[in-house]
Length: 206
Image 1 (tube, rainbow, N blue to C red):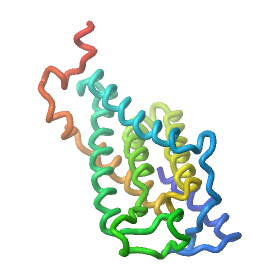
Image 2 (image 1 turned 30 degrees about the vertical axis):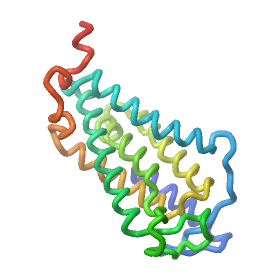
Image 3 (image 1 turned 60 degrees about the vertical axis):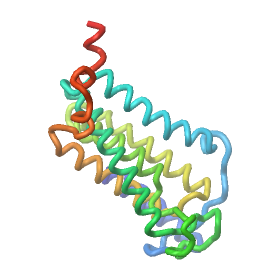
């Protein structure tokens, strides 16, 4: 995740050198609006909802007895914690979205302004981080999952739904929650389930 954060930070700063930038890090600027192709809102929503759906299905199927199963449940812990935290932060900071006004310094005004941090970037980063943390040593190709947060970050910027610092905050929050989730041996979400489900639905087919 540190590699992804560094890459995106460099990209944002390079672009900001050629555009009017602002915000608390001096890198925020509104990108040209693009809602076509892979950047469309429908595609963004499919990634958000699809990732959550696959995560829950995978967790229920695997259960918590295997490393993969535990990782699924850790990712659910991470996703829920990150989503709730991001929602609270949005309500606190009340930052205006780029599409609603080209002012990255507009905080604490309209309660309908909920740009900081990016909830969708937080969401997808929180999902992939436990898988990366648990499998990066034995399977370095798992780092390919960073393509999902990178895509969502770019899409939200192109949709003028978020500023660069919104995206960076989402990446930091999601990866932080993901890391914390991997430090717990017993995922709290798994403990909420009856034993018949916690052992995994795949056992019913064996």
